[in-house]
Length: 252
Ligand SMILES: C[S@@+](CC[C@H](N)C(=O)[O-])C[C@H]1O[C@@H](n2cnc3c(N)ncnc32)[C@H](O)[C@@H]1O
Image 1 (cartoon, rainbow, N blue to C red):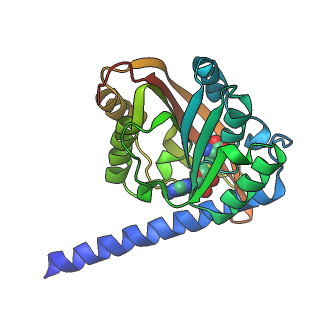
Image 2: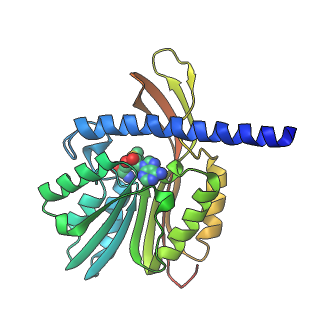
Image 3: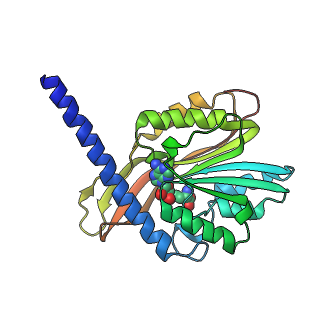
């Protein structure tokens, strides 16, 4: 009886935590997406990440490209891929939990003349089923740590591995060991990351799930940046993992 009550209380605590984090995340992303213009902003929307820019030459001899961008935001990386791919056919499936992100992504695609290459899908990553051997590239930039549970995070890594075609690539950027403090007072804040794991633990999952792949990049870099949080500014510290790998055989 006591155990049942404790279990119910733990479940409620987890549900409350998830909804609190998701509300905060939605508010801070909406603030940036509605006030900052893609590639013309001093924020992280200024340009695509370098790791994505570095990957694109690997596809220079492809005539067709199928890409999945998990947690795509307003297309910082996808619009760049759509613009820089020189082959004939290119479809980028762009998944984000926020309607506002997908709406602005579509406007950005129109503005950059790549609407025919961008397929916006509003849904949580954990609910988007990745078809097997479908994609030449799957990217998830600062997104997988927002999956609802640690088990779903591991399952999604596995699904990503299965979703890649032979010779295709994954490009994952994942925040780990995250801490947050109020930038003004220094008071400790709850990090707004649904899954906040140690970098070593994530590395162990990556090594296991992508075993047999050619690892192109695997780095962990300590970073600090400021983000808007409830009418104040939060100073966030994170160890950012960048992982790029190519499926050379039909491993996984
Ligand atoms: C830090 S932004 C990064 C956006 C984009 N990847 C980029 O590099 O510009 C994280 C994005 O993930 C989205 N997101 C957060 N949790 C998500 C979830 N569970 N499923 C899908 N998208 C999610 C947010 O709405 C936001 O647009």
